[in-house]
Length: 301
Ligand code: AMP
Figure 1 (cartoon, rainbow, N blue to C red):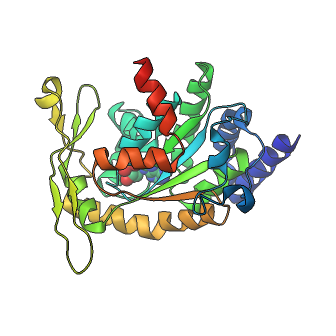
Figure 2 (tube, rainbow, N blue to C red; figure 1 turned 60 degrees about the horizontal axis):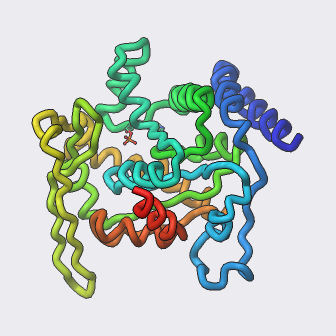
Figure 3 (spheres, protein in one colour; figure 1 turned 45 degrees about the vertical axis):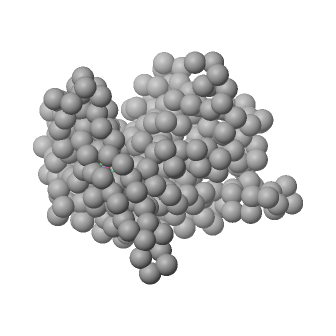
């Protein structure tokens, strides 16, 4: 009952905001609603050792919600959302849904939106909320038809309006806000390479920031492709210096406020990446109380 009334409120709000977008939002609402459940609340008494962690982390292992996780990754372009979302998706057995990938797939399909999207993406701008929600809801609906449950979203929401729509139709359990020193972000975007065949993500940048003025140094080794991908690497058209700087500006203006949106709801987990994958992955698992999951997975492999 609560779910139904939440959905209809979201639908009404969307309809009021823009009558032409109503069918699109209805599609998202229909796709998301089966995942809905009660929201998590922060309980400091039960979380004395994890003062900076959202309370929901304490309940993850018990899987008390009876469904798979519904997580979001936030963070600047180049921070590594895709890398860590994909690793967690393998570990937890939930789909990793990147709206950037959905946009790139649509671009590659030469469909009706293709030329419009190409212009927006190559300028580093954001696609309209309506288009992105339409792509996301189609992806969710296709996943649901295949029996998928739960998700790790990467690249969505990117505006407060997107966050409000998502919050209106389902419960996001946790939002992981990845943070990396600014000097590393540009280098990581410029070093990013993608295998045109398998879609694998690699990085040729070697980031070696020396300790200075009391700030520790940071080393991030390149992430080389396996031999079968080495000759098929491409660079994303929006990973040029000018466009990356524009994407970083847009992040500050449009997406930074989304952090506050989740912070005030007690759902934001801040995670400062200490370095590359070897240093960061174990610490991320520890922050998520998931160390034993990986131990079990390695033992079973
Ligand atoms: P990403 O791979 O996440 O960096 O996304 C690549 C591009 O896709 C972005 O620069 C935007 O143009 C578009 N895009 C991806 N997700 C969204 C979103 N949630 N809202 C608007 N535009 C998006």
